[in-house]
Image (cartoon, rainbow over all chains, first blue to last red; front, side):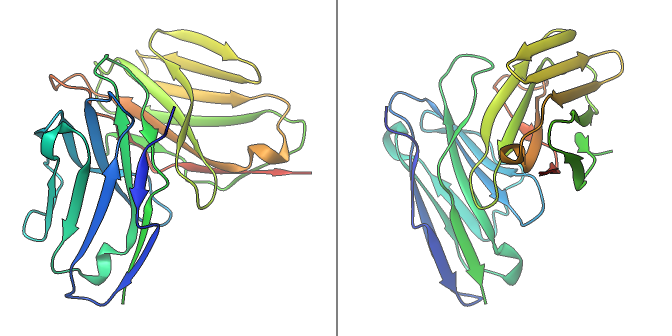
Length: 114
Length: 113
């Protein structure tokens, strides 16, 4: 079974530039999550999709962050413009629709904003 | 009060000892609890889930849940250097109609050979 695919693995940009991350969840997983993990902290949920609908984006900085999940499969997360404090690892995870299902994480994208 | 709290550590234990990791959560009616392990530079991976009060054992790992005290712990018996990692406690709060997983800040564990 293929895991959660994410790209790119690393990204270095300057502040005020834009960046996009891509995620392809495990086949058949309806729920897709984007987490932000700052060094030394636990993952913080940015946005959660159920199929192609957003069920939680309460902690997404909507003035600069956007995300979409077209056709209920893969997803992109965009930051525009980036700030220094956006430097973090962006983790994509997926789970099936069953309650209490575990999350499967991708390898993450490490973003450095200079 | 943060939703999920953990001692940040680092926690150091000698090889072969028992490592005890603790977690408290704020929402009294939370129902699902998870422990994830995260090696440095890697993504989290689930090692234990627990839903009912009491103990749940899986190999060298035991999860303990006390909903009245809003407390969940993870015991690692016969600790090995390969257990050195950050352990993330995660909770699925019941307020929402969908499954939402909230992570704690993690506890760094170092097993000394």
